[in-house]
Structure formats: C-alpha cells, structure tokens
Length: 520
Ligand SMILES: *Cc1c(COP(=O)(O)O)cnc(C)c1O
Image (cartoon, rainbow, N blue to C red; front, top):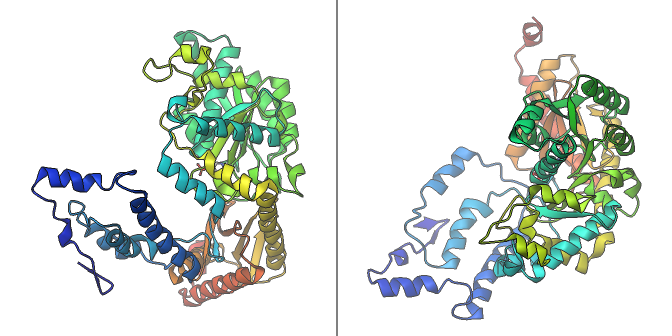
C-alpha cells in the first residue's frame, strides 16, 4: 500500500501459520514484555508525531468533507495488521492526524473545547499505561486516595463543608444524570415512597425546573429517569439570559399548588451558549423554602472556582445539594475529566449497590474505600490523575489565570463587535462566549439566517478558522467560544473579516426578489 508516496509494508502483516510463532508475536506487544525499551520507543513515536502536528499545524482544520475522508478509512483492511507501530502511525497520519480538528490552534473558536495543559497529558500517559480501575481499592490503591483528595479539594473550592463527597465521571452529561438520580431518590425518600407502588404513583408527578438556556442533558436525564415527557419545566430568563428568579419562584409555587413534586431545580452556572450564570443564591432560597434539591450545572463555569479575580460570580453555589464540574471544559484537561460533588455525603448512597464478587457490603463496613459504591460506572478510568498533575505542577492559580485570560478576551471581542456595523452582538457573556451575527444591509431575516449559516460553513471549509452557531429567538446566530489563552484579538478580527466576506458574497449571489418570495 502506498500513502503519500511512502510504501506502507502491508506484506509483513500476514500472520504466521505456526500458532507458536503467532502467539510469541502477539505477546511482544504486551505492556511489560519484553523490555521497557519497547514501551519507550513505541510511545516516543506517538509523541513525535503529535509534537510535529502541535507546532506545525497551520489552521484548526483542513476543511475535509466526510465523503472525501471516508474511502481512506474504509480501505483499511482490519484483518491485515501492519505489525509495526511506525507503519500504523504513518497510516494514521493520513486517516486522522492530517485532518483532525486542532483545539490548540488560535483560530479554533467553536465549541467548549480547550487546548490541554502538558502536565495533564503527562498524567494521561501514566494513567493509561498503569491502567488502574477506580471501581475498587484492590484495582486502584493510591489512585482511589488521589481521586478522593481531589473531590475534597473541589468541594472545598465550592464552599461545601467536611460532609461533602462526590466522584469523577466521564463528563457533564453523566454528572448531571448522576445528580438527578440522587435528587429523584431523595425525593422518593422524603415522600416516604418506599414500595414499588408508591414510587410508580409519584414518578409521573415529578418535575424538574431549569431555565430555557439549560443544557439539553437535563431533559435527556429526565427521560432516562422515567419522568414524564413534560417533566422538565422551562423557566424564563431575563434579557441577560440568566434564569429569572421571580419566574422560578412562581413556577415552583404553581407546580406545588397543583400537587406536583418539584424533584429538583437545575441552575446553570455558565450556560453553553451565552456563558450566563443563573442567580444561584435566589435559586437556593426557592429550594430551601420548597425543600427541593438544588443542582448547579457548573460544567462550564467551574473555571471560576480557581479564578483569582472572578470567584464571586459563583456566590451561592455552596448552598447547592449537588454540583457538576467539567474539568475538561475550563481546567484545560483532556477529555474525559468531570465530577459530580454533593454537599451531604449520605446522598451518594442512593446509587450504591453491592456485588458479592466485587464490593460486598462487609468491605464498606471495614471502611475499604471502593469508589464503585458511589459511581454509576464500574470499570472506570483514573482521570483524576490529570488534574492532580496539573495542580502539582502549575497550581490552581495557574489554571485560574488562564481561564481569566479567555474571559477577558471575550470581553474585548464583545466590544470589538459592538463597535462594528457589519455585526450585531447578543448580550454580554459572564464567561467566554460571544454570540453575534452578520447583519446584511437589507432587512431580510431569512437572507440574514442563510448568509450566517453559509459564512460559518464556508469558514470551516476554508480551514482558516472555526466558529459555532446557535439559534437566538428562532434566528441563526454565530458563536465564538474562547478557551485558548493563545488566541489574540487579532486572530478574532481576522476570523470576523473572513466571516463578513463569506456572508457578503452569499448575499451578492442570492437571487433577486427572493426577499419578496420569502416574505409571502
Ligand atoms: C458541556 C456542558 C454539559 C455536558 O458536558 P459533557 O462533558 O459534554 O457531557 C452540561 N452542561 C453544560 C452547561 C455544558 O456546557
């Protein structure tokens, strides 16, 4: 096979007909056999391949289409191994590394993805190689203690007391699901619904209150928890896209007056689109009055926990019953790294099951720390090590300083856009997003929608930059999410010029009279 003029030796791949040779050959690839050098050499090949990409990449994306890339992936014969790491990496260069989307590029401005810090990557390399599994102490030992220290540390940053607890998860979606599992079980417990019949009769009457800007994983969780379709009741927002506290109070009272059970209020500390932070203290007041579970989804806003200048934006978070934090959003950690943290450690037992073969109850009695007692997962990665290495090398203030930089940048870009007649800009983020759109001279909403959609796609296809899109009050907008401290206002200005040019070109080419057609 030839890739990029280089011959990749597929011939070597033909497995030996002799089973002994075949087994010896396969065993060579096992970690720990035969020498440390094999491990070092193979990993260094990978490090070199990535290092040249990291320093040499010219844009965030090549703009390749799925149709163009699919045949290259399809033609790989998975039953004919290359037998050799260098050859497999050379092949991967074509299939993945060449066209990957690079979040560390300063003109990647699209979704909530961060460039990663090197101490975390070091942790990643160690944790994958040792391959601890966090379910039980006898599969993880020190890893369990490190994860527990980080949960305690995070709880301390939130402002929870010594009774707090929690566990690492695969991401904000799982953290939100986990928190809502606990909230539902607690709602059953508080209602004294112990029997199957009692639970069945209460479940259809359970409701969750969340703002209209909350993350969709809240609705998804409600569905998975067996709640009815109408369970998630949307609370209106104020002009700054924060949950309207007065509406929350009204909705909560209304639902309870109807005999429904408000199982949880979900306040978002950093909405995905607008970076807005719901009024946490007011939400806590409503929950306290109604004896309702308060979950704070700080998947995005958790970076403020370490911000040297903006921690006050999270005031009130310490009154939550549970909090979602996504270290892979705002702590510059590789995916996956997230946690759910609860104020009262006893709540974690709502998701505890004992299995004779793994974590029998007698182990809990002997205080053997089995993290599976707290997790929705069983076999689980030691993701906590990445955060540990990050804190041990650069410290919380270092992470917070980086997060502050991107929030400052978003502020500067907001001003840049507000002063630019080519664009209109929505609200002002408390975090690091900016939602805006190209504004054509002619007042034609449909044309403006199409031009913005086109501009976003054309920008990505050109490989010059990437922005995201979203809808605001039914209209298409563009969105930049800043999580790269190396992005400069100049990078953003360049991307805005490109977007404006693509949008203007689209409008130029639009058939005459279509404004009238669309209006009819
Ligand atoms: C990203 C995000 C989530 C989901 O987190 P994942 O890690 O992608 O599963 C939940 N809530 C908010 C507010 C988010 O921004």
